[in-house]
Length: 339
Image (cartoon, rainbow, N blue to C red):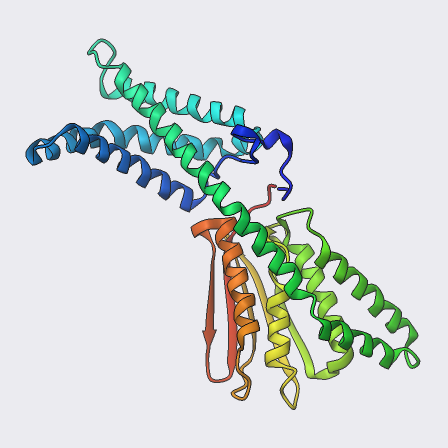
């Protein structure tokens, strides 16, 4: 995906738009709730007496639920095709799918010739249009929040003290190990190039891991053997697409709050594994009583949690586990490897 959406993705009125991800749990739940709410609203408008409302609500449930579930299933299966379509042809494809599902379900529930065929079809198309309009407006409302969250993620990570510490570390090994100093400058250049990059919204997890390895190599220049890193990495998760700068801020927090203030060595444990359709990431560091996880740490966590919500809706979560001697941030997100 691109932050600057391609013109072929333009929605109505020239506004950037894309179809909802019909394989996203949040999209599926919102679709079910919205269509049922519309059906209930129609029943309430047409009937003033409570007993008639109950009867017609039951009849409406029979007419609505089966084609609704069938339609959601069809869109789930067609999502790889819909993802590649421009917005307007995609809308036509969604409406066409809903129409076909409505015809098929209607022929099963009420064989042709019993009458009343037009009304359910019109209702299905109107409901589908309402759902698409809802997600279109929701996407437009989230666009500024997503752009702001990404900007915060970029600017918050370029901390002057990290640059100064890295340069001091390079100066410290310049004479004794010129080759290591040269490598450190290359790592610093690559790191800042990645921090400044804003051309993609989702990047392979393997790229994020490489970025974090470069960051940790730079931190070792000043922390030396005090910084121990325990990687537990599942290669099956490398292809997963994740928001940029997902891991580096968390690892930086682990180093700044769990290793740097301590007197002795400490270990940052990074576990990445794929569990079926999900990727689990856990970053743990020693918990020091004298160190408070201050506002900067909470801002990083809040920013990442917000971006996970914007990218994955209900399918992702960020949790914090704290014990007497350890602090752990755990992320669960869906495994996706298609842009």
